[in-house]
Image (cartoon, rainbow, N blue to C red; front, side):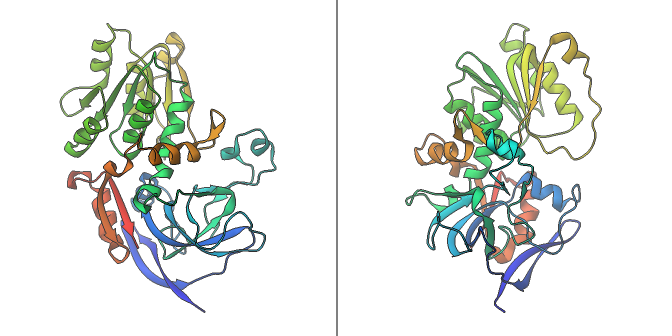
Length: 345
């Protein structure tokens, strides 16, 4: 049996490279020669024990690579294709899939369905979530398609237009890409919160109209100052926690929209009185699907390929696969300068 390397969670804030068996692809699946994988906020939830990670298979869903093997029945992809993947598979037949909401598929499964994800030398992916990348796109850009698709959908969920002021809570990868997506849509004005120097600089580099350093002030004050006390039209919350939810409700105008795209891992205590009195619309944004007649992944690929979103600007650290434990340590401590950390193979 052929062996390969895979990084497995082994305890609280522990991940280690192990030798595991390399599996052949099941019908409908392909095996990728993994080239690059990003460490996502949800990976850090696993790392910190907020969610229960697998201790038998490698995680990692911000990934891209070359098709190395194809399973039975796969015709749309062939060995050598440069691809990236969504974090889940979908059946294409259930009510949600047939009506354009495949991210809510009744048979939705994890990217690799109990096989190894992107934190392995070879990644197993179902073809329902697989997308070809342009031949001239680098792997560094290709691996950024997934988080950009998450962020693009969050902005699209708000139906933001050129008339809207959009505020974003959080200066991490999803917050920064929400900023970039909002700019690409031509919204009237953008505001983003941040609390680390690298986040503040990046937000300026991406063209934010206003960057709120929450070490010195707060979003509510900025939002009210810019709007003569009304509040902004849209707030996108990317961080999580009850305090940030309350901040979103305080910063948005009456009849405005709040989009929640953070990874909530426990119940929250939130003041909902303002939702009732101000008729605020609250919606969630779950990964990606179709927005405006096109998949969010296709849109993200176009935005990066065209140069309208400079995805590489978010990448602060790159580590070889054997140093993945250090990559997680850096990613988990934003005081060390990280925004997006990549594991490279």
